[in-house]
Image (cartoon, rainbow, N blue to C red):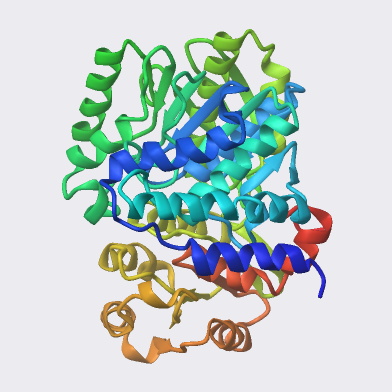
Length: 463
């Protein structure tokens, strides 16, 4: 079997380490487990300057743009993102090349003895418990970046901030918090203030913090945290300004102003007004990185990085007739941005939009439907391939049915058959959009970019 050792490692992660064991209090377990893993590798996360990116939406795209600019400045750059769309090695990237499947496998499987010891230690009351899948993958990423002698790393936070596995950097060149909205309330809290406190805990002090557009309440929390720690704060709409000069379905031309860098009429390769805002935060974060590290990042590097930025599954058009767009929007902010981009750049009056959507149970389904229903002509609700978190299908059908009429809404549990049905009903100039869950987008992207190709080419880009 091709990539047999890699398949063994993936099976090990998914079967043995999918969930953390809540034996030890979360904060203590976080520091203990991830510190144990990183110490086993010689604390690789301390060997390069870091841009840390968190937020309720846009953190993956912002991370990708930051990394693209740093690469354009000829800095060997590690990019850690989570979760992946199709296969684990997508999480770990150095200069646009994913970690080799065999290297990933050896790193993960080589930890088994340590993992067993960590589990036994907690049973006798002396340890922190068995690490989770995300902690092992993160440690493997930091090791790879150190092994490749990276001059910079861009790290996308996982869930929240205070108790996130990525909250291990005592010093950072910059921290970006893209947005703050209601998410993972059972872990982060039930108010915007509590969620903001969790994310703001990533701010250690000494670094520059760039903050995106958000409500006054969470922004006040970030401002207070920066004042407490001595961090410098740049806010979108104040210290950071962005203007969209031109826009189409391939991206936009933007002008950005920050306290330390500016660029005019630069081409951004990612479509949507929300990506222009993400790009402005990325320009600010890389300017802060240059200020903290002495790296040379000028207007040429900013232009080149913005023009070459890329991320899979975000307004990604994978087929021309009918046009098929994949977008991993899985919360209200992202669904609103998707609807706005589709309306502006894909739907010009004659085309019909066929929506294939599957949403997990812990998401705000009514708010997502309110954004997407006005641009849809037909909706096929399906189930993301993640059994225990599948959303309430009947509720989604009712919500879309009230907006569009029951005749325009259908249910197909199989994602592949749902996509087939949408393609069969679509005219040549119609648009089919797959959205609602990263798991759903990843599963259906396989049709155009098979996992085997990603593993062989070590890139998730389409040929």
